[in-house]
Length: 262
Image 1: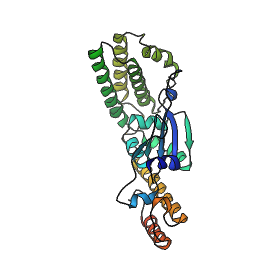
Image 2: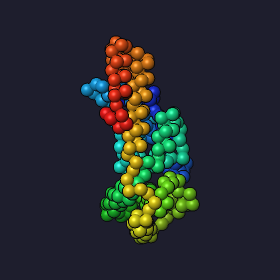
Image 3: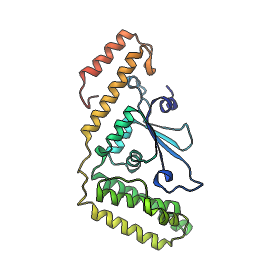
Image 4: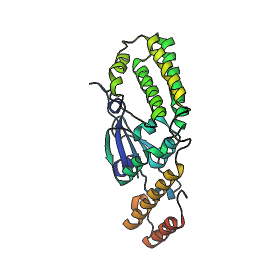
């Protein structure tokens, strides 16, 4: 099975991200699409495993395999967490809807470290551009301000909000280079300080609910294995096996395991 076939035939969740999801789109904005696919379980029974992510087939499209997506979300990866909270959902099957229902299980106080690390890395890139070219990349400066605001509000409320709302006009002014760099720098410092102050009293739990996520992933893998068994030999790229042997293997795997077992 080719990687793009996994995206085309096995996507469980797809959304639009980037400026369109943030409420910062203009006439020239791209449409960034992100998705999650569930690789058929029999593909994992070979030496060559399915990919953890796939680029395409459309321009600006990127998808993660479900397990990799969950791993990153449990680590509070900012891009993955925001993907789960996009207001522009294009597709969600039963598995995708259950993934969306688990959004709260991924949120924890880990977001402070993950969002802060990401913000620091983006700030270093801005400063490098400033020294090299005499000005930062204003679009990147805008998105760093947006990220810092998101992190602060998430820690304050326990709710991840992707859309910028009333901040749209001021952020787009930064993107157009209409705000002096010292003022942008001061806003970044203020937001970083507010984020730090919000962290100790955040309503977020200390750790994500890993057990809930593991149970969800186990059930998704088991359901995929049973679907492949129902189809018969060679289903989902499992290879030319006899249906009786295939049935015996599948039933052994899904009945002997427990939540989170591999």
